[in-house]
Length: 355
Length: 82
Image 1: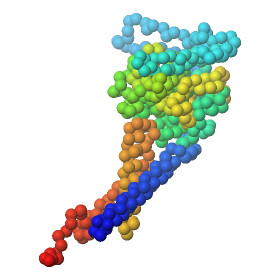
Image 2: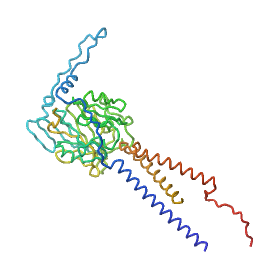
Image 3: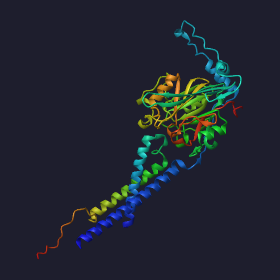
């Protein structure tokens, strides 16, 4: 009798424990799903700051070019050097500077695209030794900075708005596209797109700025000044990173990269490289597969250095890392890729930017 | 009352697991901002207040002697000697 009672009691406790555990798990699942919906899944258009950076009129462009061409002010007084500083090389329009890269007619193949306005050379490279990383490099020469645009998902600034790189690329008529900084996952971080400041709040991430004169600079969050960037003619600004090359164009050691330990591990990657005004590269690395492990951030930094870039910036990687070329996704994204909030595109012609 | 206390404890467990999940996810992907967003801040406030309330309940139960530990209390009744 006593044993039966004890057994019954134990059974009751077991049943109640299971019931409580299941109810708690259910509550947890519901809570997490609700959180995910409100935190990042719910599409919500946000108010863009709507500030214009330096107006991209020919006059401003000329002024920016002139500013870039002006020699450093000559010191006055006793400290004046005896020798004359070396003359600054004359400004050469990109179309002339990279003339040997362009072609008289438009030629589009799997290996690249050339026209009188644009040259894109695509290469697929196996990199590394034991478990190789496969990367796709798009070497880009432009005749005009306005050929380098960014596209927002659903053509709107907001949070939780998502679209595939392929759809955005096709919609914009891009020759080439690559994943951007997925600004829509964050509540802060500088966002300047095609000359419009959408978000002014700084985050803890490094900032990358492409200016109207074609130069690209990367900043640590402490060094970045929005007003200064606007004044200098910021055309695009991304907040993700980290920056992959330092101010002298040298690779950055692992422990100095401004991101967490987990992000530094081998992963699929997407990055933007800068050689000189008008000459850039998009780089996407496949990973997390049996054939390719991806690259650590330090190796990614080293790769940009080896390619000869003077500045480089990490964009959203992992499953988001995708490169679109000639109407299709070029690389093999992890789990088929995913929709993101923005992408970088290269256009054949300059669209909609005339004053 | 018993149901409310059980619910409170379930909610506290759920909130603590959620916070741990956010901590782990933030380590893997800090750009998703799992920890510093307004929703998590609100949840953290709720977690703290409920934990405080739960602590007060337990303390009150201990003080008033309603809190039972696993140990059996000695019976005051005299042993029967058959």
